[in-house]
Length: 360
Ligand SMILES: [Zn+2]
Image (cartoon, rainbow, N blue to C red; front, side, top):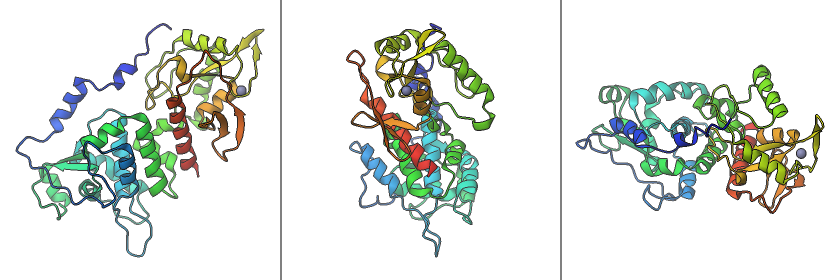
């Protein structure tokens, strides 16, 4: 139980991580393919490129439209979601054409506009026009798109620019980027399925655990055990094990006298007070929240489930609201000895927004 949280160190980018990227970087002799002019409203991917600029670019991609169709092609946004999930997983930002084709091709087939062709070579090349994407290793004029044959024989690498990738390493910016793409380009798509397939399924809940719906008997068993015994090791099915610090969980409960910070109820269980310590920003990937007091709430089991399930959030004024409909529930109860980091509440709110966007 006192094992230190093992995952946090993995989220830092290490020299190993950089060495993992090195083989993908072009040799010096490779010419960087010039990018076409950046859209007028946009900012170039330079040092002053900000999160706002990034989100604006994501929302105004120059997507192809089929004749007679109002819907924008989903090739570029799908490729970007895929690229963002690579950042989330600490995979190298640049990928060789063969890997891009193998991984993005099936996404285009499954989530592209009905009737659209599966042409991963288009976003691989044309995303350069977004100002967020770069391509190395093919000698060609910027205007003429290479065909599959040329890409296969030269195997160029492409991916998010260094600046975009660095911005997207911030979990909140990454989450906002996912919301922007989902909300702008994927009307009528099963977006939860999409996020799952792209590798961003962890955003479906606040604790990063994937809810298995009907087939989650084993997980419910784990959760029930945890609730009965207080804070304990979590064993999610698809994520590395996380171990919480029982001392800070106890501290937040004692500070609030086991009263739920949402409804104020104090439960008794086996003749003892019972409450739960909830992380505002989940510990595991993709959230990477810290295991510390400002990232905890003391909640009753009902509100813990609703909070983790993104059904309730705390607004900027400290009012607890329903994610769907926005109705107020209660004012969050605070304690002077328990400072809450507002950045974590921001993050949780953004997750709830994604949850709202992807369920509508
Ligand atoms: Zn409650």
